[in-house]
Amino acid sequence: MSEILDLSHVTLSDRPLIVCDVDDVVLNFAAPFQDFLRESGHELLPRSFRLTGNIVSIATQEAMAELEVKRTIGAFFEAQETWQTPFDRVGETLESLAEDADVLFLTAMPPRFQEARRRLLDRLGLTFPLIASEAPKGPIMKRLHAERALPSVFIDDMAHNLHSVRDHVSDSLIIHMMPDSPLHLLAPKPDDSIVRAMDWPHAGELINTHIGRASSR
Ligand SMILES: [Mg+2]
Image (tube, rainbow, N blue to C red; front, top):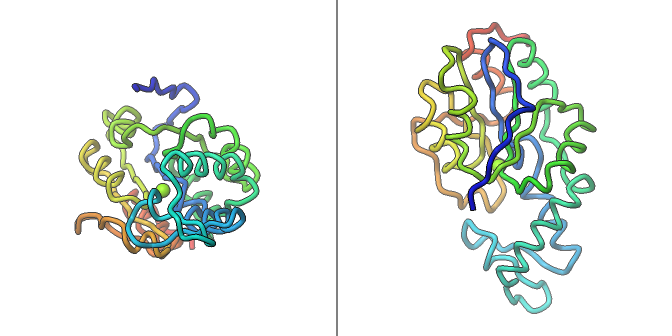
């Protein structure tokens, strides 16, 4: 299924571009999703880096079927405003960076959950433009930025997204950020060339250096 991605709500200025994933970078996903599962008598067993096969009934330990896993993730995204919370210092860090750069959120979720995500981000003061797409992130970032002679930054928790942007946009600062959830500790590791930020203040320092801006802290 090809998706025609509408980017008409995104207007970039002649400043550096910072593109930022949302789940498990800006908003917690892994931790609240497990709380959400427990409400329906399920738990996530960190046996491998996938949800299907590892979500089991607490009572019987029977694994949830694939279709039901999809439905459950959808139900979580529908209820995200009740469940998802921001990471420490994300708001103040992005706000400070936005004084000298354009900030965009690029979230890999079905576009039908975009409105709930928009409301939640707005409520948290994270009013930067949002793109919701399940298409590979590298080509999207290339479409946004590739012809511009300005610094760019991409932040994500998933190796395949980090590699996708590295392979499509030259000279971008690619930053790996992830929570130390049991599931993430099983995730494929990004290549050694990709820098890891331990938290938002650290990410802010790396970004300030890359875009040639004195740290405001
Ligand atoms: Mg993510």
